[in-house]
Length: 218
View 1 (tube, rainbow, N blue to C red):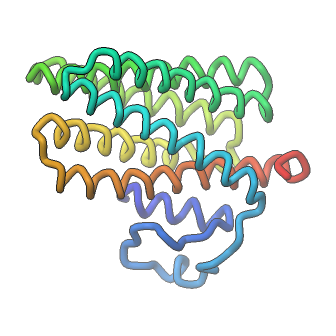
View 2 (spheres, one colour):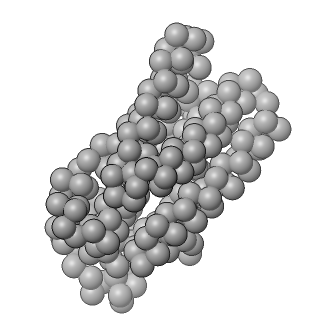
View 3 (spheres, one colour):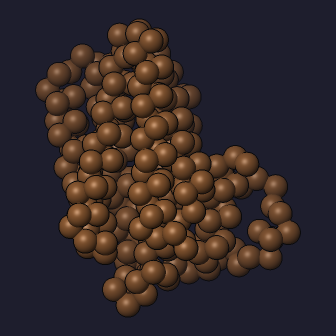
């Protein structure tokens, strides 16, 4: 099953809106689901969307700075990625405790290390290093999915979350390649898709938190 279908299935299960998603042919279950359901915790949804969008904004800025040979801009973007990861980890800690926040930060650090390695390898034309980075990112996606499923098994099925994260990793790979090739038209399409996909991930996480902690999520 493609991760877009997984995202739709997860959204349906959480009662999330499906509008704005890149939709495959709808199953009978999907067709019967409300297409305009309001999020259960709109402020939480907005906050998590902002945080996860920050991740792709800063990783994109890093790739562009590396392509341009601007070391100062690349260093700032890298710092911004780390600061954003800490904010996401703090959000997790707010619901699941300090240890969970630390665990999330460690996993996000692994994700960023992979994305950075992938970006640097693409700029250097080092295919072997790029392949290694993708392997590490795939393992990291599985680790994050396991972590989240352990925290909220009823709402974040491990296989589903892993599918979402692997698509996110593939988006990074496509975008980095396009930036390094100077293919601005292709990168613009990838960028639009990445933003939509971040909404899927953020909404799935927010929806799961809202179901697990209905009072606190408000």
